[in-house]
Image (cartoon, rainbow, N blue to C red; front, side, top):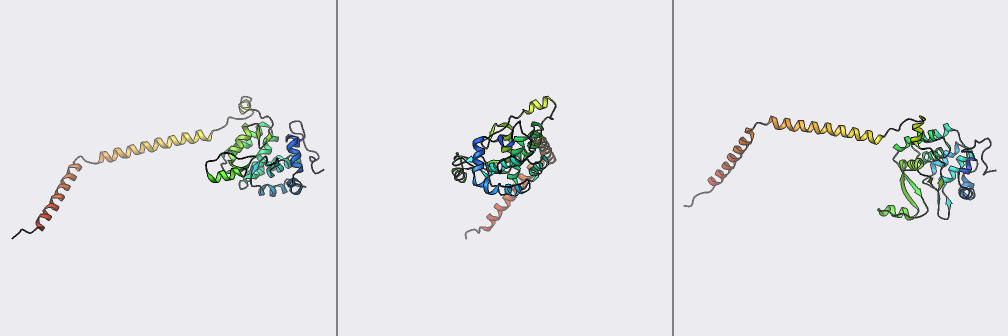
Length: 257
């Protein structure tokens, strides 16, 4: 009873929502201690407290043990919360792992248009995420190397969301097929995507050209305001001062008697 999908749940992509997770991984989640002790009788409200306690994302690690992140994902598939609740999960800026969990669930269960509209704004989120994986990876920093040897690596929220939108497998879960954005744009189901990078580059180039023009104007004004006789007067003053110093030294010497 604890492993069955909630009564009245809608089928996702033509099947039971929990079946979106492969059978092997799903069985390992059901057999894990975290699922039995912490995921029992969770609701959409009480699940928030468990998601806040999560400190890393990932699929399976070690001896094919599922992460807490993966267990909570399966729990969401089991209880199937409403769309408004998932949107509130994502709006919680201070809880990045709750946001990552909601983004993963939305990618697996929502329509392609909703997936792009809800997940693309998260590409502006550049916060770090800890990723627990199966083995070690090559790192440059010694600290990152120690973390990697322990089965952890660092990623970022925007990189994680980009993987959800572009790759077929994330956190050891095969994602449902997602219609390409270009196809949706051709069909008129979604508007063109606005590139923040292009806007930033254009703004930077404009500001840079304005700064260059202002600098050239100021340099020309400074060069034009200086009369040509300044250089000669400066040389004459320096020669006169040098001569005075020389004469002062010569007068300080007393002749031999």
